Image (cartoon, rainbow, N blue to C red; front, side):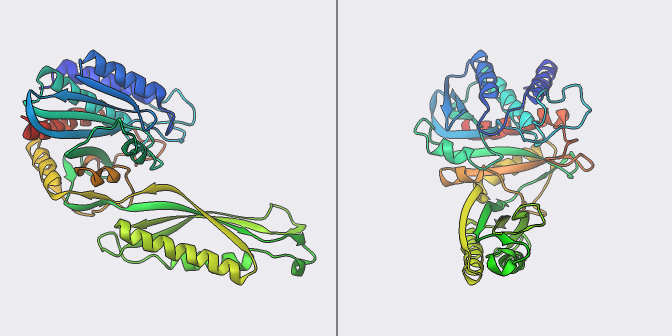
Length: 379
């Protein structure tokens, strides 16, 4: 099991990772640091450069058995961290404000335990995923032939607002699907004194915005839940002498399931193109930050819940699924997967907030929880 020395060294590692964050798709230094640690621990196999900067490390058992994957994320956020901790980010405008530094540290802690006692059967794979924050990393890794196959997959995410001794998990929907829609409207400008000679997008925008938000319905506990949030709007130039000729609308679409998301995307696109056509405009659409719904497999979720209870967590499935998305969901297409949320503290600063910092005292219970799951499946 973890020693006091392990916990101290893992805490130092977490703070080191926190000081050196890297953005999605740019995690070369972080990946190299993680790979070096895994080599020092004597991992039986390491494959790097998967889906960009991603990597996996294996600890093989002597007998045949399941292939079990545990995932952590490599990337940080393009957000300025507030002044505060001594281990504050050394890169201005980039910071680990979602806890990925803690998640990586948890897998290195698991690697320490696997190195001391290999699985009796099967293989434990530790997967470090790039580009989780923009929804690109899992798909890139899955498209890479170097990625091994898995029978099971597990992940932990810390959860501010929930008491430190509590955990959230359930079978079925865990995180909503989401996608960013960018709509561009193209008309023609004129002098502001002659607006009749322009093709302004203003009337189309007046139709589109309420129609998009009207697509929202229900709450995340309902199968047909939908939420559309307008996140950005630009029309013309910031001047007084010109009637605008173009506009940009950005919105985030959310749903409980991938099939529901397909219908929501189609409905949103129809609203934009219909309003553009009715007002003599051209329209173009593109899609960004595409996250699949994260669905917990019942068997995998039950294992995580048992391990959490054994580690002393009070477990419930209240308020699930999360509206926020997670790029772990795509791994559910190839394995029995589940994610658990571990409380970071009822009053802990929120994820993606400038004052957020992963709680170091969550490292040890996270490692022990994952280790219990690994041993249940691989001995």
